[in-house]
Amino acid sequence: MEEAKGEEVTLFGFWSSPFVHRVTWALNIKKIKYKYVEEDLCNKSDLLLEHNPVYKKVPVLVYNGKAIAESLIILEFIEETWKENSIMPQDPYEKAIARFWATAAGDGLWQFFITEGKEREEALASVINNFELLEKELIGKNFFGGDRIGYLDISVGWISYGVPIFEEITEFKIITEEKFPLLHAWMEAFSSSEFVKDTLPPREKLSERYRKVREAIIQKKN
Amino acid sequence: MTSQNPEVKLLGAWASPYVARARIALHLKEVQYEFLEEKFSAKSELLLKSNPVYKKIPVLIHDGKSVCESMIIVQYIDDVWASSGPALMPGDAYERAMHRFWTIYIDNKFIPSLFDMMTSPTEEAKVEAKEQTMASLQLLEEAFGKISKGKPFFGGDTIGYLDIALGSFLGWMKAFEEMNSPKLLDKSNTPLLCAWAENICNNEAVSAVLPETAKLVEFATVTQTRFKYAPPAK
Image 1 (tube, each protein chain N blue to C red):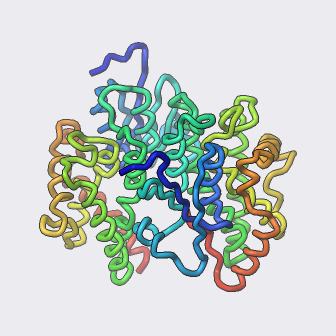
Image 2: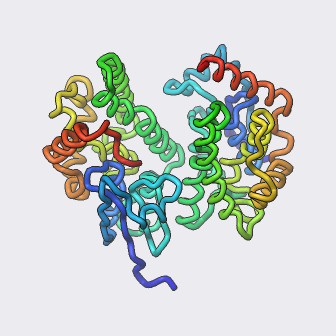
Image 3: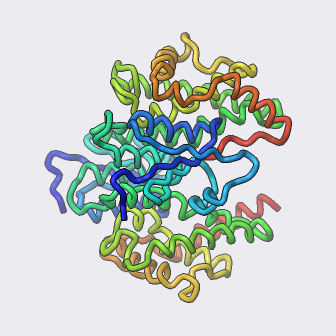
C-alpha cells in the first residue's frame, strides 16, 4: 500500500452502495491507503453533512481536508492525483467513450427492477439495446480497459454482482452466455479480480435489501 | 487513413443550449467545423446512426467517430485541441473536480427546475420549481465566489468548462425573463453571477453562438402551443 506521505484519505460510505464500491475499487487498484467510515444513512454523521452539504450522500472522498462528492468525479480525481496504475484511457476518443458508457450503461436497469407489466417491458428493451452496444466494446478485450481493469470497468462494475441479484428477484435472465457472451465472461473476470473479490457485500444480505426496496416501491404504487 | 485535418461535423439545432456548449468550445479552440442543423420534428439518419443510445443532439463527428453528450464533447474538444487556445479545464485535480461537480448539479438540479418553472402543468408545481431554481442560483453564486477567486470566470481569466456548462443557458434564461419568469440573475441576490453573465456574453465565442432572446421567445411560444414543451436534447 502506498504510504500516506502526510496525505490523509478518508472515504465515507455505506456497505451496499454501488457508488461507494466504485471508489473502493479505484483506491485498491491505485494501492492507496485510506480510512473508511461506514455511515448510517438513517442517521448521517455531522462530518458527512459538512463534507457534502449539497446532496448529503455517500460516497464522499476527503483528501487532505478537501471533500469530493459524486462517484464518477471521485474516480477522475483519484486518477489525476495518483499517477501510477492508470485507470483512464490515454486517447481522447477512448476517454469520451468510457465517460459516455459510465453513465449510459445502467440506464433502464433500475426501472426494469422496480416496475411491472408494460413499463417493465419498455425498460427491458432499453436495457437490452444498451447491453448489445456495450457488448461490442468488449470485442478483443478481457476488460473495457483492455488487459487491465479501467475506469469503465469500475463504473459499470456493479453490473457484475447487481444484475444477477435483479435477475433472481425478478425471475428473468438478461445477461445469458448465449445472448451476451462477452459481457457474461466480463462479469466473471471482474468480480473475481483481486481488487474486487473481497469488497463485494454478502450476496444474501444485499439480495434481501433489494428485495425489500422493490416490494416497498411496488406496494406503494398499487 | 486519417487526413491531416480530419473533418469535424456537429449535429445540432440553433435553439439548443446543449448544442451551444459544444459550439462555444469549438469557437474558443478555433476549430473549423460543419454545422448540420437537425429538424425539430424529424431526426436524421445520421443522428440515429451516430447516437443510437439517446438519439439526441449534440453529436460531434470527428474523423468519422461520434462523440455524444454535451459536456463529454467539451472535454473531448479540450483534449484534442489542447495546443489551441487556453485550456478549458483547470490544471489542479481538485479544481477540475469542482468544475465537474457543479456541471452535474447544473444538469441534474438547476436545468430541470428552470424548465419546470415555465412548463409545469399546475401553479403549485411551478411555484415549487421556482423556489428550487432560485435556491440553485444561490448555490451557484456561492460556488462562483469560491471557484473564480476574484477573477471574471469560473475558469479564472479565461472561459472554462463550468462557464460553458452554465453560460450556454443564458439565452434561455433571458428568454424566460421576457416571458414573465421571475428575475433570475439580479444585482442584489446574485451580484457575482450578474457580472459573470455580462463578461461571458461579451466574449466573441459565446456571443457568436447564443441565439437572440427574441428568437428563443418566439420558438418557445410556438412550440408550447403545438405540444407540451420539452427541454432541448442533452
